[in-house]
Amino acid sequence: MTEISFGKPSLNAVYSVYATAEHGVFVLDCNVTDAFGETYDAVHCYRPDDSYGLTQLAGQWLADNPSFPVQPYVPPTPAQIRASMSTLTARQLRLGLLHAGISPSQVDTVINALPTGQAKESALIEWEYATTFYRMHPLVSTIGAALGLTDDQIDLMWSAALGL
Image (tube, rainbow, N blue to C red; front, side, top):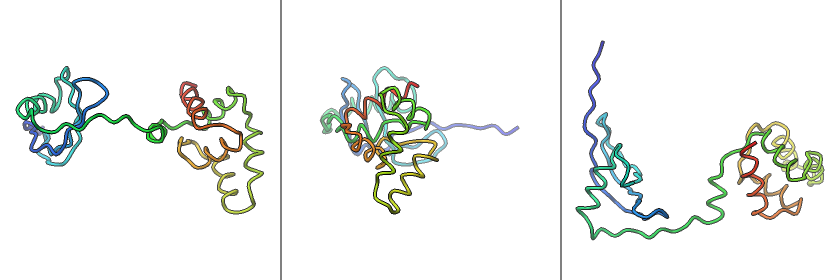
């Protein structure tokens, strides 16, 4: 049996540090060498109560470099939040619509009302055959707008459907 030995990870360089919404927690853009000896650029989330990975090295680096500029926390935009929302299965999406009072036949009507052409055919294929749906997919916006839903209403329905 071959013995596997691991090296000690190292924090080679820090390019930038960003504050987060959580006090004392930072995101470091850095260069690291991992336990397997691979060196690469990475993003590390430093949490003072975490004792795993590079956290102790990052904490020491932060303590040794108190004048290094920390970029302020900037909350994500609504579009960024939407883009990061988890996908829904076809089942979750359809049940979520139903729970919001929107029947699959209403979606069929919206799609069938689209102008004849490739966009309509693509929408029909997506609606009928897709197994997962992304919040930022153009079909979601098209159907939502045709049903008179705002982005915030779609977000709420999407979030509720994640639990179905």
